[in-house]
Image (cartoon, rainbow, N blue to C red; front, side, top):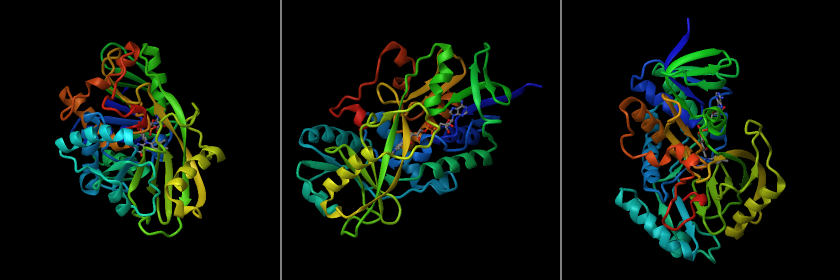
Length: 397
Ligand SMILES: Cc1cc2nc3c(=O)[nH]c(=O)nc-3n(C[C@H](O)[C@H](O)[C@H](O)COP(=O)(O)OP(=O)(O)OC[C@H]3O[C@@H](n4cnc5c(N)ncnc54)[C@H](O)[C@@H]3O)c2cc1C
């Protein structure tokens, strides 16, 4: 007898697991999650998992807000751990970005986000010890913070299982090799046979593009391998284990606490890294990008000149041409939905993506925001999303 499902979700990263959980808890019938390696074995496991609401696009700010509220009550709402820490988020701005930042803050305040502009003096009070020469001001989000990608995805997956979803994980049972459109429903070809399904959701990160291509659907994704440097801080006032995450828009880096005595350093620009389509391979960081990242931290914190470099790691961003994801139904394959191409800023959006994709599939449209701008067909038409408002979108504002 043919293997069947009501909904197949492809990919066990933060998005696939969040979607599977939402579908299962909302009574979507037989939900099967397919993952070729392990839960959180893609970008999710390497995520810095910063949760900030500083977006130029209001829809994304609303989605990030939904996500942050879920992270703040994760145990109660989902069950299990997410690694949530409310350490706050501070943006450092050059002069020319003060006005664009004001526009973002006004939008955030209008939609109920506690964010505000802060002066250089206020920043110095919050985070003493920084050299702020060319910083003209900043923004602060006291309620924001960070979590842990792997913990979160595993908790979503467990919650999905508790709600009755079937998890097929590993190369023997979870690898999808093709998606077919037999005319009524979706046929998912796996390493273990065929699943006839009413609906499927493709949340396979970088690999999603290859599964769409045979249908003539363009999802251009550039895989960019990012380095994360880690420093062991020297003791200093204001820079302890709960220091705010600092988004440094002058040097294009971010600095985030990462366990006892450590700060991790990442790059702002999604294209800062090497193109590497071998996304499944774990690679150690190279000396040059590590030194560049650590140099930004040392410039910013001259008192940390003695901070020691620890071994960092690398992870791959799935960058689309406008650095925004593809979300929603795939017109060329009736019954197929896509949630991929998050371009290095998707972790914080994953609770909202789960909720909204379940709305779309079960109710016909997403509930609390309009996601139509994220349609996958925009790439084929060359109609990219413009973030507007002043910052360049590729710096992930
Ligand atoms: C270094 C780094 C730092 C980041 N920092 C942040 C941050 O601070 N804040 C933030 O919000 N975001 C951040 N991100 C981005 C965020 O982590 C990603 O957007 C998010 O994890 C993407 O999740 P995903 O589920 O779409 O993809 P993935 O996590 O890549 O999951 C896709 C899954 O699909 C599986 N799969 C692929 N093909 C198939 C197939 N054919 N069959 C079955 N399974 C398949 C893969 O094995 C994988 O497990 C960062 C990313 C990186 C790499």
